[in-house]
Structure formats: C-alpha cells, structure tokens
Length: 124
Image 1 (cartoon, one colour):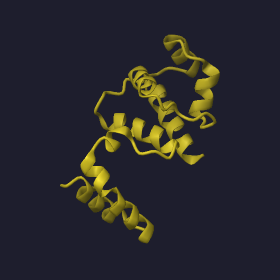
Image 2 (image 1 turned 180 degrees about the horizontal axis):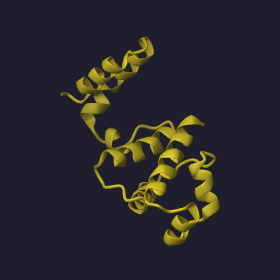
Image 3 (image 1 turned 45 degrees about the horizontal axis):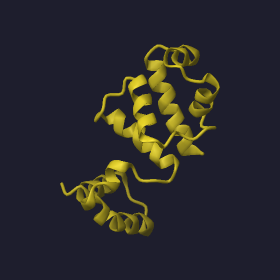
Image 4 (image 1 turned 120 degrees about the horizontal axis):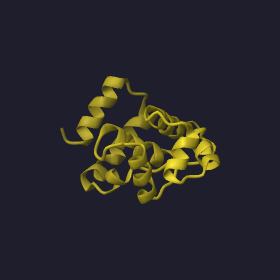
C-alpha cells in the first residue's frame, strides 16, 4: 500500500502546486472527485494505461522527459510491481537487470553503492 500512497501523494502535491483544490481540478478536467480522492489517498491504484497517465501528467503540468515525468510513471509502475515501460524497452538495461536483482537480494546497499550500481547498469 505504501507505493500506492506514494503515487497518490505525488499526484496530490503536483495538483496543489497548481493552486487547485481537488474539486476545482476535477471540474476543470472533467474527472470524478471521488475517484481522484481515492487515488490521492492510495485507496485506488494508479492507472496503468500510458495514455491515461500522459493525460494526467498534462493536467498536472508535468513536462515530458522531466524528472517529475519519470517519477510519475515510475511510481505508477511500481504500484503494480512492474518496471517502467521505458526500461522494459531498453535491451541493454534488461540484460543487466538480473545483476541488479542478485545484488539487491544479496545485501543492503548504501545510497552511494546504489547510485554506483545505477551508473553501471546505464553504462555510464
């Protein structure tokens, strides 16, 4: 449930940054306030349909390719126990995922070690 709440919290933070109440946001974008409230509270899982997520990102003024864009999609994927689509489409990353999984299972990594692992996986 934590991941769902994280997506919902992120969504709510972005909406509030626009200066819109839940009802104002829903009215502006023709969304159901009950469902959006449940989404923001982590009671409803994030949508998995890319087009829906892209539409929500547009409503939240999240620029494509920005850090917030990737966070938004990563949280949605993580809520379903999935890897983000852009990573699944990268053959080089996919080939290195077993190493990442073995490493993560083998021991708890420090923040610095995890950053180094990410650099290695990305080939940087």
